[in-house]
Image (cartoon, rainbow, N blue to C red; front, side):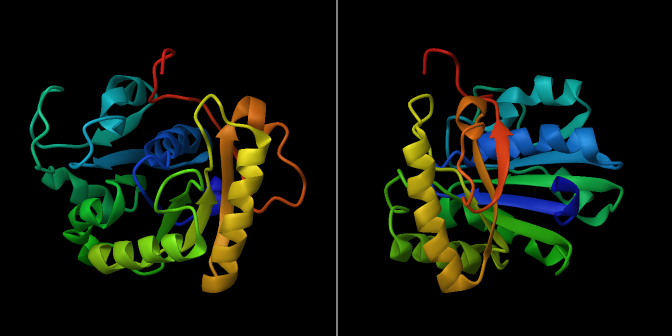
Length: 225
């Protein structure tokens, strides 16, 4: 189904939603099915941890063009974003994955470039983790969507149920998230595009759960976390 998503895939969500984990896994899977070049932009200039740029070498080894801060150096975290971000937005030879910093604050970075993103050429996926604060109820998720849309100047087009507790995740967590995204879908008309989980959980997701099952590997966390 990845091939049926729009050319520009934007991933947004609250801190701790697992947004970056999903975006990185998505970009890697995209290289397996896309006939285009694949680029991944890390627009997170807010969060110091679990950023896609931290896996730049592994991603580039898979043929993914990684775009992040204009300031080189892993120990630096200055709020600067390379103008290179714009290139795959306009170059249709690319499939483009954009990992946006958490919440509306991180969304302001994307808002700087939103005029370059054509309507109908993008999907903006709202990552929902029903175990995280501020995204545990319908009203909280709706507020997140509203604030992110306002700051990015783009519309959320679909939902992803990524309810987890990292390695302590159970099927019950996924079902809890399914109940929440169903409410959000009914309130907004947004489709639940994917339900994502690590493989041992994904293999047991029950029928009737909304979204195509999207198996992920934990790329952003070391074994002790």
